[in-house]
Image 1 (cartoon, helix red, strand yellow):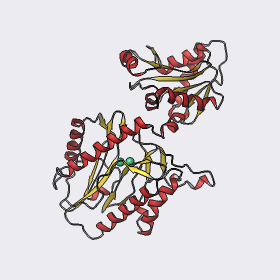
Image 2: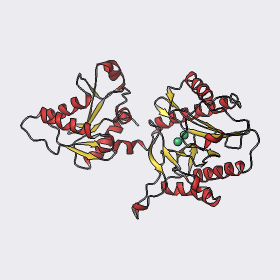
Image 3: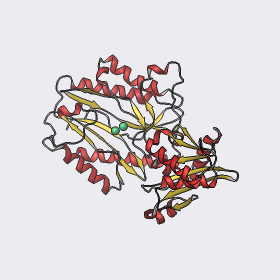
Image 4: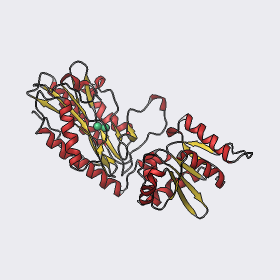
Length: 376
Ligand code: ZN
Ligand code: ZN
């Protein structure tokens, strides 16, 4: 999908609310709409009578980069903060109503917006110019286009390669941080722009920490080690988790691993266009319930991935407060993770995570590394 088409979709979404423009300040949204990857920017997408127009505001550090990246978008280089400059420009240009994403706007930013507009149109009242709306662009970003899917495939494939390689490196007695360092070093050498998040390496009793980062703790002679990591390729994140075992399993460990694996497979099997996200969660959770392990499964089953490591949709239990509200459903082109886990404090934990592409008939697993029991 061209950037132009993305902007048209965003513009159409606000036009349906009888709003003339959309202010975008969340950087992944800015990038998705205009291609600009700099660290300071504000973008406005305007429903102009002659078509959809976009204008990017950034500072002097990004003059050349903005010109090269933000094709089809007017660029204004400003010495003022980009947010202030864009608001002043809109007030002066006479934009009627402008939507902003309330989930990405701080109270302080909103104050600054109001002040900037009041300063630009002295005397004239522009009350009601800014309209808080939901995450319009983030919602559009949930369904990936072909170009995005290709990048996500490349990132996921690199993740799988790295997993294979790290298995030959890991040894009992090695620090968790050494494993993380080796993995991240290999990732950069293979072309990753950066890691999607701080690499998780949790071994032995620490494997019971769902999001424990790598520490100086040593890999055990006998026990689990969970690796959860991702790489960024051309802006897009990969995400996968595998849990491996050093030495022979202690009583109960294999049973928990098999139960988590079954739950993960059931979650993957439930993925298809039109299925409620909460039903995917239930498919995985119900198997852990059957194995009497669900009380140790303390997080949701998965999340969307893309330019950001955590995006919509969320694959979680249906909130009780939702009542009969329609459930969010999967759409073909969404890329989500399926990552059930069991964490027994003081003992051990197991998590298995794949990233999958939702299709009309099911899903394609983008992280096909083996999930069979691995004994190192
Ligand atoms: Zn992960
Ligand atoms: Zn994840």
